[in-house]
Image 1 (cartoon, rainbow, N blue to C red):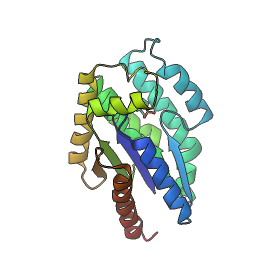
Image 2 (spheres, helix red, strand yellow; image 1 turned 90 degrees about the vertical axis):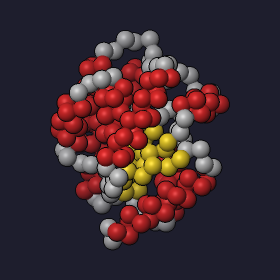
Image 3 (tube, helix red, strand yellow; image 1 turned 60 degrees about the horizontal axis):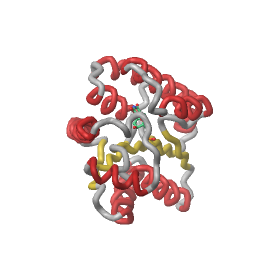
Image 4 (tube, protein in one colour; image 1 turned 180 degrees about the vertical axis):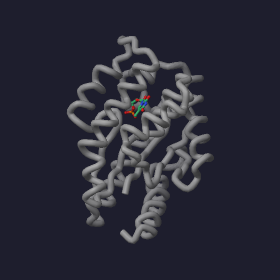
Length: 207
Ligand code: TMP
């Protein structure tokens, strides 16, 4: 079972993934939490260099680096964990490439689809939670947490609005897989909504 979390910067997805992870752990499920970019030694090392804002990277290079990190994560962690019947929670996955590199940078979605299929070996999330929030709110939250700006966070608000819209578009195109939650709600309320959705999903899969 693969559950992914997506959203713009500061949408609260990382907080929600921890809450869900702790909840599922407490209930006795075999659950693994990981993230993109990163999640492996290779990926985490690359993430540090890659997210620095002062290194210029062209859109196609950017896409291919994300794909390399994804291939490593799938081979090393996600694939084996799913084989073992674990629940995998991943902070960003295939959809971030459609949103950021596709709709954000203008790379052909068909190319992204082909590469995604290749590096994931066809693995697709069973559920994708999208934390939907306004760009200004996301940035306020990021600033309040004292994060420094990385390569994406320094992009113009219009870029982030495009990303927000693209996640909603992707959700509309595949409503069975996506679960959009209003990121303005209280953290606990959002957690309860996600919990209910995940419990339903596990039940449907006889888990
Ligand atoms: P994070 O802030 O959620 O850890 O993600 C780091 C940045 O990487 C975020 O701005 C989105 C970006 N990203 C992409 O552009 N494409 C991708 O495929 C992934 C996984 C992340």
